[in-house]
Amino acid sequence: MLRKILGTALAVLLATAMPLQAADKAGWIKGLLDSRQNQTAQRLTGTALTATPRIIGGTQAKPGAWPFVVALVDATEPNNYQAQFCGGTLISQIWVLTASHCVDGLAAADLQILVGTQNLSTGGTRISVSRIIMHPRYDSVTTDYDVALVQLATVAPVNATIPMLRSKQSARADAGDRATVVGWGDTTGNATYPAALRQVTVPIVSQTVCNAPNAYGGTITARMLCAGLASGGKDSCGGDSGGPLLIPAGSGWIQAGIVSFGIGCALPNKYGVYTRLSALSGWVKIMQSSIRSSGPRCKTGPGASADSCLSAAVSDASTRLRNLIVDIADEASPEQAKAARASEAAWRSALPGICAYDRATGGETGRLRCELRETQKRIEDLSDGLGTVAN
Ligand code: ARG
Figure (tube, helix red, strand yellow):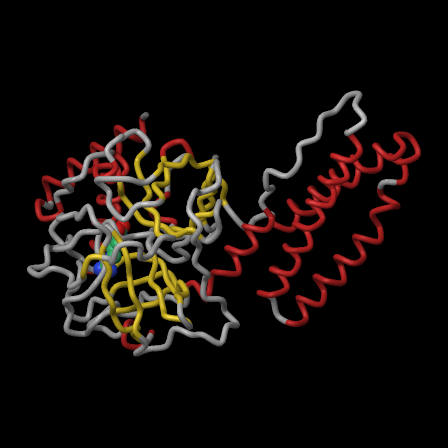
């Protein structure tokens, strides 16, 4: 509550100081985001955001396009148009990928995910959130590591997901390649928010060009990717954050970036800055495979089904542990990967010994309980420090 009051107060303060960025969407989350963005702009340029004279050059999305794109909405505001404050993508039916700056300071209950509609005025389903995971190295001053995961409380009733660009993939996002960004963000740089989903195609820009003195002057890190035109005119903008930057792959698409920040919108040389997924998709995969899924929950007490339930839970945990090792190895150097696999094999062969006492005293049930507990502990140890979890 205190935070909500603070956010609103800050937004009001900044709105009076910077009338050009007046937010015409309701909600404390939007206010909080707008005020943070002004702070980022102040830091980068020494001045507040200024309105751009032209639209950002996009078009309305075709019906049915981008079914994996979702809207982050303020749970306390029932009107979807008013409530939308960021975008996101379904990378599985229970995981939404978005920007850390979109969820910074929010609890899972503050947020809902709108899926299954391109139009904020009609259709779609709101889904509750069970968990928010920000990247542990997300930096709100530099906007480095601007990635977060949102876990849905129930499976999304949408049969469409988007793959992420991985570090070792042959598909790449090279300077000059065309990329498409999708969202419900500002279409003018002056707080004009559309109800219908929009898209714009922009070329990817090299780190060198983006870090030039007339662009971002050295503040673009290896976790960032720039896209846009030197002449300006086409860009993402406020409200698009968290949404995808997509590159064509075969007959479909791969997500190469997440809308992160920019100085103004569509200004010359001030390219749109995106979270570089090829640098961070490893972290995303590791978090996905390590978080305890709603695997079988076994009843204790008398009942013939107890052991079979426990054994299903053990094999579920065991699979998640194996996936976790694969993902960790995938991101590590060859030596680190080899060490991770070796320590994994050693741990597995030690498990019967670790659980020998439980087996001797508790029989098969004791052994299964022990293996479940130890496997879950192992998962937690390995994923320790990989994410900041807000429930
Ligand atoms: N940070 C903005 C948001 O929260 C997105 C800014 C993107 N800006 C840009 N010029 N591409 O919606």
